[in-house]
Structures are given as C-alpha cells and as structure tokens.
Image (cartoon, rainbow, N blue to C red):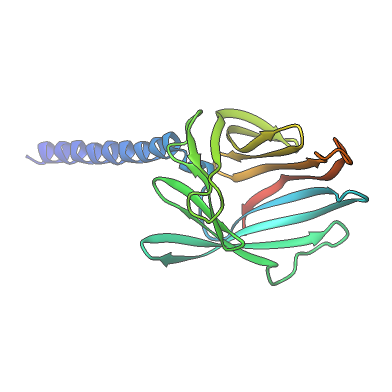
Length: 232
C-alpha cells in the first residue's frame, strides 16, 4: 500500500508540474502572439534615449541633442482601466545626472485591445492588439485630433539600434504623408521585453504660392534612439 501510495503521489505531482508548466508557456505564448511583450509594464522599469532634434524655421537652423529617460512609476486605476505613470527626465550632454524631479509626467495603459499613452494630456493609441503586420487603426481615436491611420509594417523581425541587437521588433508607421508642399512622416520601433527603442519624426513645409513656390519654409527632424534599458 505504501509503495502504491507513493507512486500515486509522484504521478499527481508530475501532473501538477506539467499542467502549471503548460499554463506558463501558454501565457507567454499568448503575450507574444498578441504583442503585449512589445511594451512590458513594471514599476521602476526604464528606457534611456539620446534625442537628436534639428529645426529649421525658415531662416535659421537649430540643432539640439540631449538625453531622455522614461521610468515607469506607480500604478493607478482610472475608471475601469489600469494606468502607470511615466516619469520623464532629461539632461544635457554635458551633465552627468538626471534631476531628482521629472521634467514631465505622462501615463500609459495597456489593455487587451491597445497600448494607450497619455502625452501632454492627449491619449494616443500607439499599438493595437493583436499586433500583426498590416493591422490598421486610428491612432487619434481617443483624442480631439483628426483621424489618422496607424499601421504595422514590420512584426517579429530582428533589428540593431545603436549597436544593440533586438531579436523581435515591431514597427508602427504613424504618418506617411509625402506631398509636393508638405511632408509628415512618423514611425516608432518597439522591441520585445523592452518597449520603444526608436522614434523618427520628420515634418517639412514648402511654399505653394507664386512668390515662394517650392521654397523650404519649415523643417524638423527628430530622432529618438535607445541607449540603455533596465530596472532601477
């Protein structure tokens, strides 16, 4: 009886281990299938970037380079949604440390349908789930701006950014307007287990009147690239 009972215990134990192992793998697989892993959320998780910003206002060009650090802060419930604070710190190239207090505080929410970032008090639907190539949605669906089509152009492909290799990335094209007198191109790249690793922004305006036809009136190019990530 003792031998049979011990054997039964072993069988039950192995069954429990296998079931829980399958559940864990299923959860991980579901997260990867849906694309939730492209923007993980955990308090004290951070991503640090170097930002290159070139602005031409019609007469002069200004080049600015600085560091930006985003740290996931405390969790909060707003209605039926769970949000996290995003504490944003900046420093110049010559400075060594970030300030104690953030320059600004944004917030982020990731539910089963979308990743939403509240930036300067406006909600942007940055990723729509399941995050698959060709998926199309309105990035301004939750704000007052005109509708704009976001689409996923790359999913699940490796990429190297700032000499850092990422095995799975997602590219979201947020704007691809390219007209004779106006250009507005915006895109973001997200890496599995990290979050956003690169953002590109280009806005350009040319004269359309006889007096300034094709004259460059305005141009801004802003590139944000990851330099570090981890947990504090």
